[in-house]
Length: 254
Image (cartoon, rainbow, N blue to C red):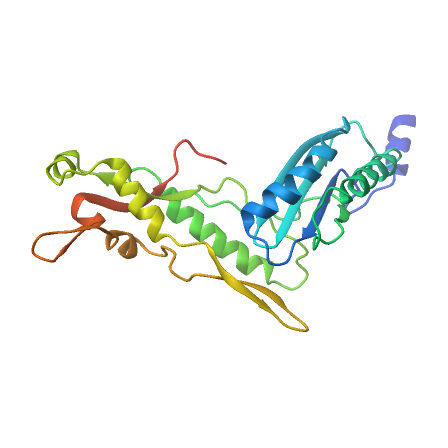
């Protein structure tokens, strides 16, 4: 009876408060390419944070003008000890500030509270043959967008999605007849996928990095990449010597 009475007296919450073991560091580097952000900002901040044994995992993303680092603490840190750990994280970020180049903003740190999952939704393939993972992933992303827009929704997360890639399968006989190599094809595609900064636009309220808009955005565009000009004036293109298709990345990454 004592046990049942104690159970009835336990505090209960619809959405229990859990330890704040997750944090995010956001740093802005206006006008810098993703490669510069990675080498000059993200790697330096990660180096400092990796000195803390309390951190279990770091996951970073570097984009044009932006660095984002996700932090996860080890399981043993609860609500009574987590504040001290986050204080150490802030100190490490302050130490790293002097190593960052001019023009970089102060790293912005924010811890996040874990909450209970309100609703779990899964998509399953019930048709014949192997499941089209790419199609299921795109449907899941569309469903996530719709759920995110529902009133009262705080956050949505997608798990188990399949990463897709563009696969260029070269016909070795046609390639040899054209006196080309796989590296020749790869280099031609890389040159056509322009992502180099084209300049910078500065104004009183904006500092924008301009990029060339010639990147490869479709399978048809990749098939049309020229490899060389033939004697009759026509171009030999990627689609003439290979099959270009969208496929699920192997091995899977998530």
